[in-house]
Image (cartoon, rainbow, N blue to C red):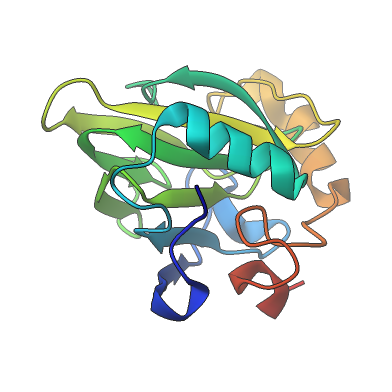
Length: 178
C-alpha cells in the first residue's frame, strides 16, 4: 500500500523554541513536521512498515504508544507513523508557552527533529499505536531535559538531516528544507 498522493498531503511545520533543558528545534532549526493523512486510514502497521522499508530512508523499529513523560532523542531524528487510534500529543514541553499540542490520528506521520520534546497527553479512543522509525543506521536514546544530559544535547548539531523524504522518497516536504 502506498501513501496518499503527495498533491493531497496537508503538512504542518513548527519551529519550537527551547524551553528549560529541552532544546526543541533551536539547534539545527529543522521544523517539526506533521503529515496529515499521509497514509490511508485502511493502512495497517505492517503495510506502513513495509512502505517505509521500501523507501529506505528510515528503519521501523517498534510499535507502541507515545510515552506520557516528555522526552527527546539526542542521537537521532524520529519518524512516527500513527497506525491506530487518535491522541492528543504535546511537542516542546507541556509547560512551554510556545509548545505545539495537536490531535493526530491513524494515517498521520510526524517527523520529529532530534531535541524536540514530545509526549502523549491523551489517548482519545484507546489503543493509540505508532510505528517508530529512525534514519537507517542510527540508534536512538532517551533524554528527559535533565542537567546531566547537556553533553548529549551538544551532539545534536552534528546529526545529518534527511537527504530524501522518509515517506515519499525522491519528492516530498523534507526536500524543501534540506
